[in-house]
Each structure stands twice: as structure tokens, then as C-alpha cells.
Image 1 (cartoon, rainbow, N blue to C red):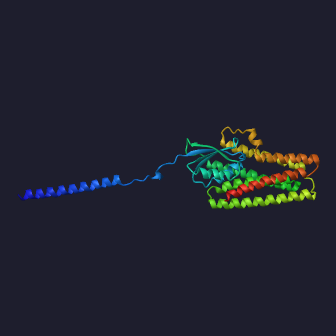
Image 2 (cartoon, rainbow, N blue to C red):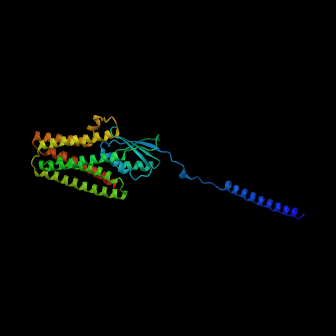
Amino acid sequence: MFDRIVKSRGGRVFGDEIQQHDSRLQEGVNAQYLRPHTLDTRAVATPVQKTTFVVPQMDCPSEESLIRLQLDGLAGVRGLDFDLPGRRLVVFHDGQLTEIEQSIAALNLGSRRLGTEEADSPTVEEDAKGQRSLLLILLAINFAFFIVEMATGLVSRSMGLVADSLDMLADAFVYGLSLFAVGGTAARKRGVARLAGYFQIALAVAGFAEVLRRFFGGEATPDSRAMIVVSVLALVANAACLYLLQKSKSEEAHMRATMIFTSNDVVINLGVIAAGVLVSWFDSNRPDLIVGAIVFGVVMRGAVKILKLGK
């Protein structure tokens, strides 16, 4: 009798526990399904798109470096693919298209967006070490010819050579900024860009003032032979820079002639060569001063572009 009571009570107690457990389990299930669910957007991968821009004034390695520096701090940019001969830029991104487009337009290179589509691959693989080595070579070439042209221009009294040397210095500044930006903070990059831009503007203004002084002061005729020889060497140097850049992008290492002779840097070199010929022909310093004034204007425009990187 006692055993039956214990068993009965034990069975009843055990049955009550099972019933309470089932009730709590059902409440938990109901709470789980009735609770409003929110989508974790961080877990959803944003598709990478590629936007193609045509950039008519992107004809030199320095313009490529300017664009790289301008887009350096944008979080949505996943990769850049440059086509200097075709004057085109492809930006791989996962958003911020408006900001990307405005940043490129701020450089005043005549950029225009052609279209946007989904990218086949999420990024463009770039050889960072190779890119750094290339920038070092370009920096060395441009800075070396800045010294050569500046020294020769002062000795030969040629403002065309002096102005072209500042154009070489402007390109060297851009390459130096690109190297400095690797591993550096955005604030440091902006500070160096402002310093370089203002320094370049000061040199261009001083150059304009010297052109005016010589134009109205009756300065002696410059040495035309020095102008031609050094400008030819500078032309070769600029063509070598374009070749190296094209070689780094293509295994064929082939470059169109139109790309070389429509480059702003090469056009300037040809202008100084032509000025040297005209100086020898007319025995006058006017052709040299005119070309010098034009090149100082180009240098001023380059300084403004560098200053925009400091904003």
C-alpha cells in the first residue's frame, strides 16, 4: 500500500515536472518566432561595381599619381585601373560613387563618367612593391632633370629651361607625395601637399616676374644651343618615364607614338626646342620668354592641382 502511494505520488510529481518543462519550452519557441527580427546588414556583402571615367587631360604619369592620391582616403574604393593611352580610368568600388566622381572632378582634368556595372572581380591586384620602385625611378629622373635644367637655364639665360625645370619639379613633388602617402596618415599627406603646392606657386610667380623683367629690360639673348640640347635630353627623359609606366601595365611593353607626342610634358619640351631654334634664327630672346611664360602658367596649374590634395 505504501509503495503504491509513493509510486503514485512520485509519478504525479514527475508528470507535473514534465508538463511544466514542456510549457516553458513552448513559451521559448513562441518567443523566438514572434520576436521581431532585424537584418544584420554587416553580414551582407555589398556587390563591388566598376565605374569607367574618361579623363582627357590624364596624359602623364603625374596625373595618374594625382588621381591615386585624391582617391586614397575614400573607404569605398577597392582598386584603380589606369589606361593612359586611352585616357580612361576604371574605379572598383562598393559605394560612394558620388563622392568618387566629385573627387576626380575636383582635379579639373575634364573627367566624365561613362558608366557603371557590376565588377567580375572584387579588386584589381597591384604590385605594391613594384609600384613603389617605379615611383622612386620616376622621382629620381624628374628631380635630376630639374637640377640639370635649372642650372643650365641660369647659365644660358634661358627662361624656357628654367620654367621647364619647375615643371619637372612639379612632377617630382607628385611622385614624392605618392611615396610619402604609403603608410602615412591622411593629415600628413595633406600637410605635405599644401607645402609643396605653395612652394611651387611661389617659384612660378617669381618666374613670371623674371620673364617680365627680361622682356622690358633688354636682357641678353640666351644660348640657343644649350636650350636645344638640354630640351632634347629632357624629352628623352619624359618619354622614358612614359615607357616605364606603360611597361609596368603591359607585358608587351608597347606604347603608342600618339601617347608620347600628346603628353603635356613632351609638348613643353618640344616648345622649348622650337624656342631655341627661333632664338638662333631671329637672334632675339622673345621666343624664349614667350615659351617660358606659357610653361610657368602650366606650372601654376600643376601647383593648384597639388593644393587640392591638401584640402
